[in-house]
Length: 558
Image (cartoon, rainbow, N blue to C red; front, side):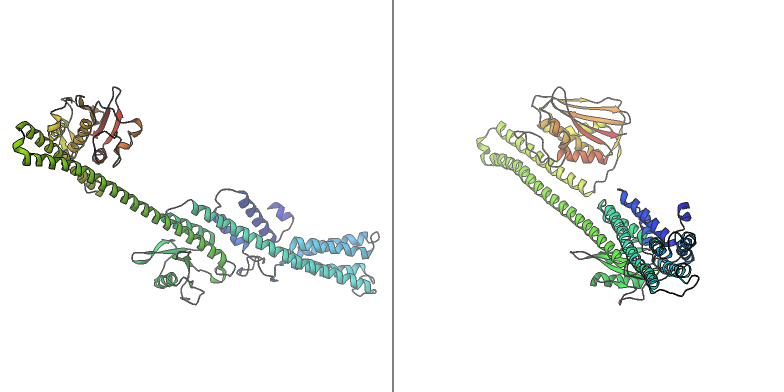
């Protein structure tokens, strides 16, 4: 500022210096541009070159030739200073440099004044320079009369140069102001676009749009979006207080796709200017801008920037809507895929045991007289086992439906883990009695708060898997232990074991990491176990045993 004071800049020149400095800083940064800085730049760039006392700037943005006064008393003094100094110096050097040659120096002073202080300063400098040159250096001296026509031509040339230079300066300044305005607008749009590119959620996108527009244009805004009950407000600044006229105007804009509100033919009594957020698909919403000073805010030079902001907002909203629709379609496709997998699994797993049950019962009923008692008993045991498998499958399907539907309500009470293990073995009595099962539960194990039936179902599924995927003579181990503030229950087999890469996936629905020759299943057992254990705020995981086989462990908090 000290430099500016020493060189006596005009307010216009000081403002231009500030704009150029700010724009240079904006162009040199790679990060997101601060919206408040952009707002300050817009207000600077859109002012007309007026004296400090001028209050109206609606005709500006640097476009259009305007000869409104930008010459204040400081600029006038600055314009008179060079020619005055040149006149004083010319009186001393006139004997050396003849008077007519001083005209060239006066022309240079006019050019310098035009470049330094503007058009009217150049005109004033040219007129005062011509008068001073005529008075002091053109015979007869100390008079404004002319004795030679060539001196008249010199004076006319001096004035012409001043006027021409002032016009060229005006054009250059207008072009520079237009370039500054375009650069500031580009920076504002870049900031908005970069912020929108980082968001994908609709509410976040609306918030980003609202903040950028409020900070850039310094006026509250509101956005309406279609909903189930019609057009609804999705974003609004706290300073914005909508009324019934604004709501009706927004509905008309949404239906017609045209602007309405203050300054238009429709709803001109409203203080809100409404624009449609329109894309190639349809009108996605309505943007409402409160107009506090219509002459300034709705100037023709500012409307393109507002419309460009609205277009960017509409594209971002469309992207968020399409992303949400794509996500919904993906969910539907995934649900359809799961439904098909479920139907295929159910049809396969129901048909096999039903065929076994039907075949065994038909053999007993139709050929009973030809079969001995032991054979009949064996067939009935087969039918009983297959019926148990059917019951287990249906129970798993029911549990999965309850888990996914969120209708599983636990009734937790204090229970003994040993009782739960016993109840699970009782349900598997037909198979469990024929296999070696080792149970290791400390007698002093504390009671656990749990829903008894779901935990028994977890143990049944784990034991059923261990019995199916291990050799007939291989032992099954069931154990429980206290670990800090939780109880860990483990079920281990001695089979081939789950491959290392499948240990995390075995808890997914319909995933079966068993080899092709292993017994069939729907791939729901471990997934149901995971859901039931997590409903108790517990955790379940699987790991390979060093001696071979798989160990599934789940923990329940005390």
